[in-house]
Image 1 (cartoon, rainbow, N blue to C red):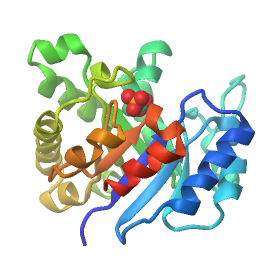
Image 2: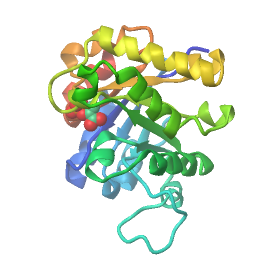
Image 3: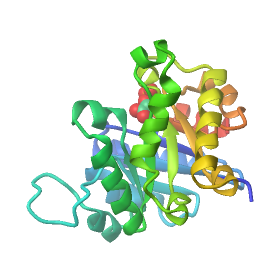
Length: 252
Ligand code: PEP
C-alpha cells in the first residue's frame, strides 16, 4: 500500500476556542480528501477536546496536541500528559518542533523520551527536525538532520518506528516566507528515507510519511507535494485560514 499523504496544521498559540472550532469545522465541511489523504489539526491544548468534538468521528481528520510531558503524571505544574490526551481521544502529538527546541530548550534526549512516551501510549508522534540557516549555508545540513533523526527516533524498534510521522522543517523557512525549493525539500527527504532504509529496512522507509514544513502556502504547495519523497506538509500560518488550508489540502 502507498504511504499516507498527510496535511497537518500547526496553529501554535493562535485562535480563541470559538474561532478554532469554527476553523476546523469550516475545513471539514469543504475538504475533499482523496483515498490516501488525511488531515491533522495541531491545536492549542485548551482546544483539543472541543475541536475533536467539533470534527466528530472521522478516519480522515484528526487532532494533534502541540506538545506533552514525557512523564506519566505528578508534580509538573502547567504540563499535560499522554494519558490526559488519551482520555480525550487525541491520538497525535507534534514533538520536537523547532520552537520547542529553541525557545523552550528541549534537547534531543527530552524529545526522544517524549517520542517513546507517545508510542507507549499509542499516540502517533509527528517528529519535527530541520536545520537553522547557518547550518544550511555551511552545507552541513544533511549530517545535522541525520543526527536529529538518530538521537530523536533511532532508539525505536522497527515496529515502533513504523508508527512515526516525520516533518522536515528547515528553521530558516518557518514563518519567514522563505520556502525551501521543491528540489531542496526533495533532496533532504530522499536522504532521510535513505537513512531510514539503512537503519531499519526499505519497506519501513517506503511506508514512512515525511512531511515538509516551512512557509507552505497555496501558491507553492502543489510543486512541493509533487516531489516523490514529499508526502504532505506541516503548515503553520496558512493553516489559520480555512480558505488557504483547504487550497493546500487540495494541492495534495
Ligand atoms: C510550523 O510552524 O511548523 C510552520 C511550518 O510554520 P509556517 O508554515 O508558518 O512557516
